[in-house]
Structure formats: structure tokens, C-alpha cells
Length: 241
Image 1: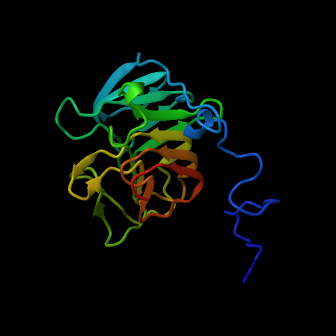
Image 2: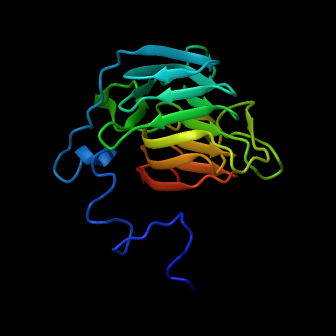
């Protein structure tokens, strides 16, 4: 047994257990404004930004506030950049009956969502704050790639007709840093809900760290094959894993 792993994935610490005395998510987690004595809801800006729906076919930047009114698909070869401090709202049902609004990064597409501890990127519901916290109010964030998976390719959970997987183990689908996904996990069929953050066939060139899923009806994070590594992950009050 090697009690000092040499793998560079691991971070050397001066403490034992999951957390240091200075908690890495203390400034931006859903819990930040809730514990120990403050029972208020974390501050979310008003819904004022553009509505989005359908395919994104050219490089796009999201900033301030955005509202997803149906499922949004970032097409192969396209880069979606989400600026720090942006809040992405989602309706509970799609205007085109396509299923719960969700952001889907297709294989070959790139998401650059780089928040900070003081300006995280938040995905949440348009539902009135008086009804929160609650689960299953919209879909979730799905990132699909071309990294190896069982049996070559698979259809992604929660979205109809979209496949992932390939042979590019080091592929990059972009970056998720300081990203919060709250109140998602809409049911689309029996035993078929959308996870908070789905990573399907995502390659090791992708960065996923300092991310949180809270109040999702299904899993917080779920990986389907792929080679991506995750660090500094928080899962709160989800209905499954």
C-alpha cells in the first residue's frame, strides 16, 4: 500500500479527511448563505437576458443572464463561452414540446464555462423563489464527447437520439470551473431523468473542477465512459447519487 501516491492527479494536503479548515466551496456553494444561522436563499439576479432555444451553430458568448426555453444543442465545431458571473435560467417545460430545457454540448463542440469563487456560473430554474428549494424543475447540463465508451457509441441518458463515444481519449470538450447546477433533473420517462451534470464519453483534455449540483431529482454528476477527471466536486440534496 502506497500512502503517498505519485499520481499528479492527487493534491498533497496537511490535513486528514475531506475538508481543510478553510472550505474550498464556502463562498459559492448553495450552503454558503444557508448555514449555520442564515436561512435565506442565495442571491440570484432577476431574469432580464435573452431567451435561447434550439441549435447553436456558431461561436457564442453568454453573459449576465440567459433563459433557456427549450433544449439547447451546441453543434460540433462550435464554442460556447459562458462568462463568469452569468446566470442561466431554465423554464420547466419547453416551448416546442421537445422535453425539459437543458444545455447539451454535442461531441466535437466545446463549452468554456470558467467562473470564479466570487463570480460563479449558475444554472437554475425560473420558478419563483418562494417555491424553492425543489427538485426536477428543469433538465440539466449534458456534455458529450468522443472518448472511449463501452461498445463504441451509446445514446445519452435523458435526451433522445443523441450518441456519444469514440476513440479520442485525450479529447477536450472544454472547461467547467466554478459552475453551479441547481433544481434540475426533470423526468422524461420511466427510470429516465436528466442528471445535474452528465459527462458522456468526455475526454481527459476536459477540465471539470470546483463544480456543484444541488437539489437535482436524479444524480448529481454521472459519467458514462470517457476518461475525464473531476476535482473539487460538491453534491447536495439530490434524489439519487
